[in-house]
Image (cartoon, rainbow, N blue to C red; front, top):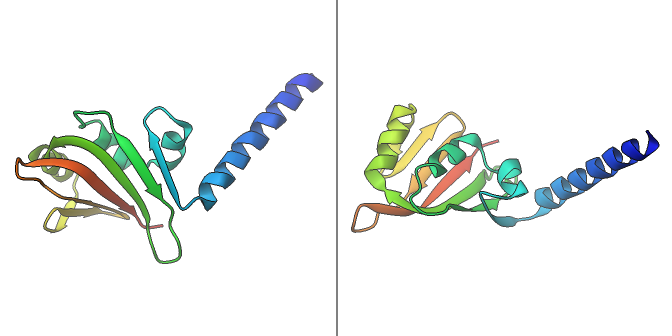
Length: 125
């Protein structure tokens, strides 16, 4: 019984310490198969990553004061596919390649072949 309690307590301390490390890190890079993915990636960006034709990579920048949390999603897919998805999810177009829904904002750049390699997600806390 004491051993089980000790293991659980150690696990809680390790997870808490890792969360503390993440919270003070200015920039974190990670993939889909990592603890960072589950702790840092908002659901709206996870859903967009499912559209990727290549393996998605993420870069997280923490929020600071009035600055929102900024999460970059790097992968490739067709721009019209992303626009169709965003419109189906009730995102409102705020400008050229910029969409917003609630506290989340999505921005992206389109290349000459109507492809996207980077999406920027802003999460206003």
